[in-house]
Amino acid sequence: MSTVVKIFSGSSSQNLAQKIAEHYGIPLGKEVVARYSDGEFQPSFEETLRGKDVFIIQSTFPPAENILELLLMIDAARRASANQVVAVIPYFGFARQDRKDKPRVPIGAKLIANLLTAAGVSRVITMDLHADQIQGFFDVPVDHLYASAIFVPYLKDLNLPNLVMASPDTGGTRRAGAYAKFMNSELVICYKQRVKPNVVDRMMLIGDVKGKDVVLVDDIIDTAGSITKAGQMMIENGATSVRAICTHPVFSGKALERINESVFEEVIVSDTIPMTCESPKITVLSTSKLFADVILRVHSHQSISTHYEFSTML
Image (cartoon, rainbow, N blue to C red; front, side):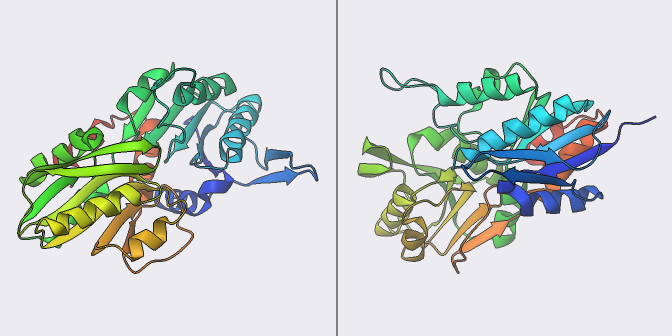
């Protein structure tokens, strides 16, 4: 007898989880979250999980309650005798804390990995980690997907005549370089120096963008200060047009205001984090079909390696 798949959602990813379940062909599982007057909460599954493959979808962007809710749901599913409990984390929060960059700070990404393992997760499925090495923080399998599966076809359909891929900082060079190689385009890099997190002191351009259609590639847009400054610099250096693609639209502080006032013709993002506000400059592409396919492959013990190569994502 084959194992039944159950897909559930935490509070932060209801819309995406609903789309994933629809693509998979099953209804989204039933769960409720009881809340006490002091703020304590308790998730509860409203259907049997015994012997089932349980996939819990929850992005762990702030507040920290999203992480705690995911941990409680994993623990509840494990105690309900689920066959396996898989955490589907479209946006893996605290991933920017992947190392000690100064004395007396935590490695937050490692701590989150430890907490997930301690809660009893069997496997983790996530997308565009801020640092690839975070996969090694886990002692359970990690399926690391790439949003290029949805961004590359969209870029090809734009048919930009003088495409140049760009990285808004040196840390994203490898990511932008992969896009440039696949799209057979040139690559330019922005070199920036920060005085503190989310504050850029100065920025300079490495490469030529005169007469080019520039597409900046990043995994996270937080306050949008760096990316909009990079876009402005492209125009000042003679670019014909500037766009940006970003997997995780954190969009904190004045991010939307900065994007709306920026030189960008379009900012293309995924739905790993739900958009709470609309903007004429923002295009949202859904990751739901990709996650549904990977859930099917994980459940049926099929290879998902085809999702790791640009050439097989089209």
